[in-house]
Image 1 (cartoon, rainbow, N blue to C red):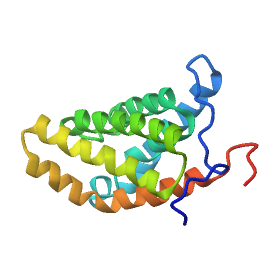
Image 2: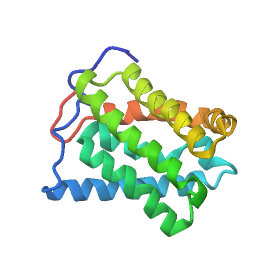
Image 3: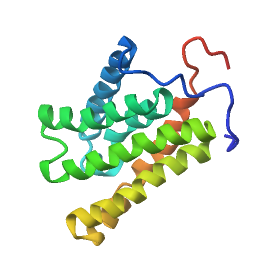
Image 4: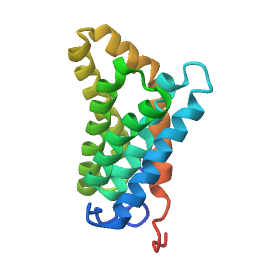
Length: 177
């Protein structure tokens, strides 16, 4: 895998506008993915905190379709997931929402500024996670607990980087690689 930006495959699509029907279609699909993937991961004991599945499609939405799609996915996914399954737990909902929003913002910006590379995806994932540790430490008044969450989530961070890069490399419709 190259660390160099790929100009063709995985390039961000034109950002979706909230006035387009495609915005609602893709956002719905990404939110559904962010509900289904955590449900699967929760079949493994400790799978949610370890694998961090609720962030995956937010990364893809923000990167591929822009800030509005990323933010809609970032906010709706944890809220819908909590309403339907009780996960994430109420006490973690604020932290997860903040991390999701940071991920959408960072992914959208990096995608448009630097293009797709393994290094760029790694910077996005590590960026929102490190910022999330700071926010979680401030919100919970427990930096140690925030660092422990980061440590437990290391497998998920690696999966987001590698899996996110792999999915983002897939050609968009009409794109030839």
